[in-house]
Length: 84
Image (cartoon, rainbow, N blue to C red; front, side, top):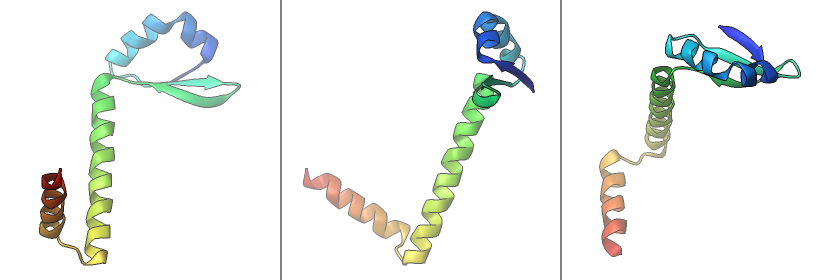
């Protein structure tokens, strides 16, 4: 993983994009603290999938704890949508 400061990232942006396309992740720092990351689109999509999976796991946990079934959620959602 490569680390660059903001001004270096600005000056070398195209080069950093090329590196990201080759699966190199770049951390951009400002005043020594990380503020952004440049990564390949493939890695970005994978991270979004992981976030969605974690959200679904949390929803599943909350649903189980509340005693509400997926069927009940579906039926209520349909009822609400059909009201309009």
